[in-house]
Structures are given as structure tokens and as C-alpha cells.
Image 1: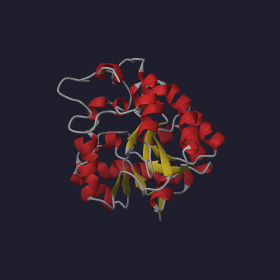
Image 2: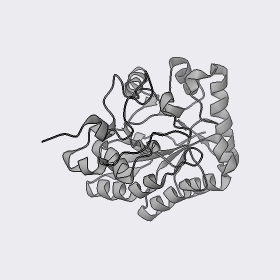
Image 3: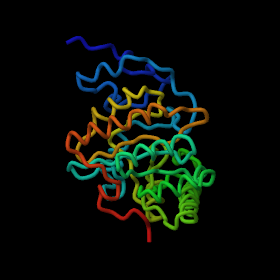
Image 4: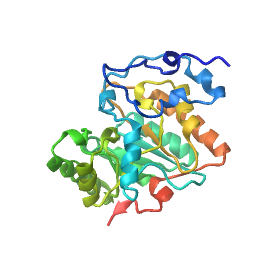
Length: 280
């Protein structure tokens, strides 16, 4: 079998920026590890991601997630128990363009997901936040304005978490138990501060890379190549200014249909982990 070159498989080329690669010292990107029948999904190259909250230079190598999960196994979570359940999670919303479209697909397939919401966007789109909650999805906390928490004073970390929790409580009457740090960026002081506030830190073990301007076929391949029993899948329901998540929306039906055919059940993160969705 002849394998395509790395530049062919990695859709935005590498290295991404001088001196930095998002998967250095860790497994290669999902696009490099697809099954043989999925090579056809990865034939189109796309431009580098250049805007929006998911900036490449802020993202840590995945191996660091594993290290923190091993040090804080009850509080930093990468995946659930190894049973035929998968949790879809959507970051960076709500907005009034892409989040409603994601919600409509999920409603069509009767899938409940977990939305990690940004406080500033909640304040801008309260009606969408209410829809997420009303339709039975779980609302999680993704900070107020999406900073890298390891690059701000620790005194501001609690403010990022609690300001968002207060806004969610004001709108739908609950305080999230689940917190996802922007970019997955963590260090020990940040972890301890988030735990002290009564939160579980929810990372992921399947990255769709949908924020990186991939095609729907590439997003689909990234998820299907790595999803398995107990997976937590990272996707997005909003992005940076002018960013299109059309291919995220287009990929979602194929992902749901295929994984259901393979015997998986879709659950929320609290259902997957057997923990409360909200703080009392």
C-alpha cells in the first residue's frame, strides 16, 4: 500500500508556526491516523486557520492532558468508562448562526449533547442558551471570554469561571458542574482553583479538529477514526468572527448515523461519567 505524504494528510501543512507544532511529543493529528477506507476523505487541502477563539498557538500538546488526568484522576477527565456510549461536546457557543443549526441536527436525531459555553456569548445570545437547556442538553462552563487560563493571574481564573456560572444561573437557574478550559490549557494552580470552586474539568480524547477549516469529510473521518467506547468528542458550535462551521454541521448526521450503526449510544457527559450536571 502506498501512503500519501504527511503534507497531503495534514490539511494545513506543518510546522504551523515556527518553533511550535500542536502535536509535538504526542500522537500525530487525527487526520494522520485514519483507517485505510477513509483516505479518500483527506484529499483536499485547506487554508490555515487564522482567526477565532481556537488559535493554534494556544493549544497544548495532547500528552499534557494525559499527564494532568493521571495526576488528578477524579477531577480532570479525558473519557468515560469503556462501554458503548459516546458523549458529543460542543465548545465556544452559543451564537445565533451555528449553534441553532447544530441544535436542529441533534433534535432530528434525538441526541443529547453537552455544550461548553462562553459567558460573553451567553450574555449576547441568551435565547440560544435557553434553547440548549430547554431541549435537554447539558450546559457546561467554558470561561467568560476564552483566555488561556495559564497565561492570566490566578486571581482572574476564579472570576472567569464564576462570572460565567452566574450568567448561566441568571438565565436558566442552574450552576454548571462541568468546566472545560479554553484550548485545554492547564497547570496545577489553575486545576486546584477550578476544583476548589466545585467543578469537574472535562477534556476530551477525540478531537474533530473542526475549528481548523476542515471539510465535512475530514471532520467525519477524524471522529470516526478515533471514537470508541466511552469517548468524549470535541466539536464546536461557534467560532471566530466570520468563521464558517458549515462543515461541522454537515458532518454531524454522518457521524451520528455511523456510530449508531456500530452500536453506540449518545449520552451527555454527566450521563457518561455518572456525575451531576449542575452544582447544588
